[in-house]
Amino acid sequence: QVQLVESGGGLVQPGGSLRLSCAASGSISAINNMGWYRQAPGQQRELVAATAIGGMTMYADSVKGRFTFSRDSAKNTLYLQMDSLKPEDTADYYCHMDTVRGEYWGQGTQVTVSS
Image (cartoon, rainbow, N blue to C red):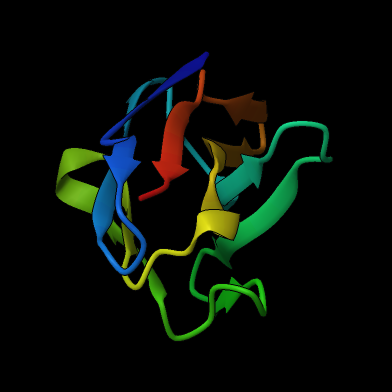
């Protein structure tokens, strides 16, 4: 079993920045891919950024050049650096990990971009 806990969300003005963190714990093994998704009110959950182990990171077109996905393997932590935030980035952000033992989601962290 893998537990994912996100943090770092909050209220930020347009043009501002936030860094989300996702701490992973438990029986982490044989990760296929990992990343971040988001879900705005009334919308479907969508991919923000994801990477397969040893592969390139993919970004949604709407966040390319503004968001950066990274990982600290030693700390089992994923990050999402979000710059130049826009009101349309407002959503609940979820950490995701797909392993050979199953697929795991965090509980989500809320990001609100508003003046």
